[in-house]
Amino acid sequence: MAKVNPIQLQKHLKGMEYPASKQDIVDYAKQQGADDNAIAILEQLPEEEYETPTDVNKAVGEVQ
Image (cartoon, helix red, strand yellow):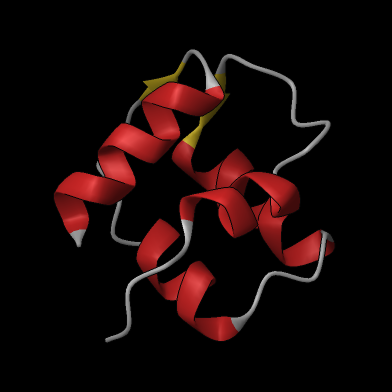
């Protein structure tokens, strides 16, 4: 699976309200047109509340 660019990922999450659950983040990214690879990465995130976009990027980095 290809790595996801954190800048591109945050473009898809722009306007996301935090804190947000993993499912909220996945659903929002889908609505914003994130590609299949980005969605697949987000679906691998731990089930938890994410307080900030930085928390999401950190979790994505650990998944990849």
